[in-house]
Length: 383
Image (cartoon, helix red, strand yellow):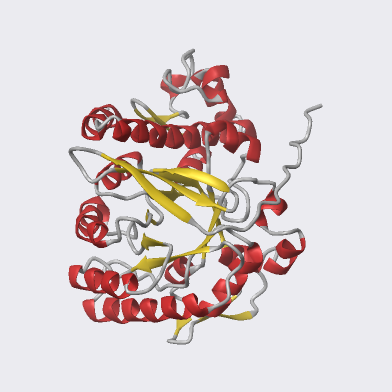
């Protein structure tokens, strides 16, 4: 019988969040850094596997550690609905509740304002909506979002913000951006837990004047880092990269830069080149559960009949358990037969792939060769 993962001793002393940049690539804005939190350090550029409800779907904490994860993301909005931040607080916070000893970042729920736009009512005070769990009327304010994340005891927390849809008229994008800045100021005044870092979130749609104004207003406040939100919402990779090209350089060089909800391996490499330090995205696990693997030679759709007799691993360059152990033929069989192991192995591989890509990017930046690494990687990924 498989032994349970031993409980980690998670009793760190609260400490201030710290971040340092140790190297910059010669031919780009790519940076090599490290962040220090109450639950340890993580290296940047960093990819955070998404554990929306305090679990990265199909994967255990042991899986994540062996894959090389140094930090994960959870969602305060979803956890406040179920099981409730009060219950998590009784367990000593998210780290003990989910038995993850390393850093955790929690998103506030601002994206849910975007995804629940049809049923949510946005005012300057906050957002009211019906709970998708039991239909109860709820009001989420900047202060309430910080309170939830304080009780969850995450290392890095995000303020409540308003993410606009694409396309969006300049007038409303400006209104949402101004509201986001005001909410950020209110979030700074709310009581946080010991050692918790708070990042500001830059909004403004795809409008340069709004993004620049938002950066100016937020950097006048004392945030521990800065996130770029409101991208990857339908604007496409070209507009996203354009927005990054004029937004990222304006952010403080001594603070981490976090691009929220992005993206594909190509998106990550393009964004690292522009100076982004942190990423999160559901693609590795979502694609894995749908039978699509990211590999060093492009996407592999494991259900395709061409893999029925294929004895090769998903990716010859990968050291994950799935690639060390199973053939493409066997993984295809798992999906055709509806076996859960297929979803788990494909998700494990994809998370490992993303984390290995970040590790390789860090090595390339340290060697002053990121531009060449990016060019070679994109050539392989486009096959």
